Amino acid sequence: MNDPMKKMNDFFQSRPKRTLLDSIDAYLSQKPLSNNIPTEIVENEHQFIITVEVPGIPKEDIDVEILGEDVCIKIKEQNHNNRTIGGKKYIHIPQHVSKANMKAVYRHGLLEISLMKKKAKKIEIE
Image 1: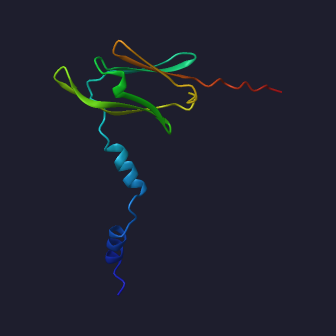
Image 2 (image 1 turned 45 degrees about the horizontal axis):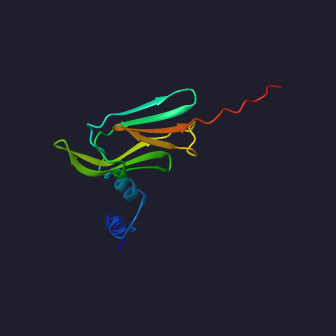
């Protein structure tokens, strides 16, 4: 007997362990940084600069890395001034920004991440 509903049900019951949708769901379900943490993104002629305010967080509890087309900021969860701070934040890197020479500096409660913009290639007009 060819029951299409049974075939569809069997398909969803026997699907692979990790699918694209599972990967997307895992990515989106990661705990985001607290909404109370101000983040500012500024571009100037030469740089793409991300500034995150995390006063009182030890430098050792902050990780910054590039994952694909995003900068990932991870802060170890902790209680600080009667609030919980921690989690991950992803910030998309535009295509005109180079991922090669990222620099992160943490001073006085401000984490500043700088990335250089790619230089435009001039095309000669014939």
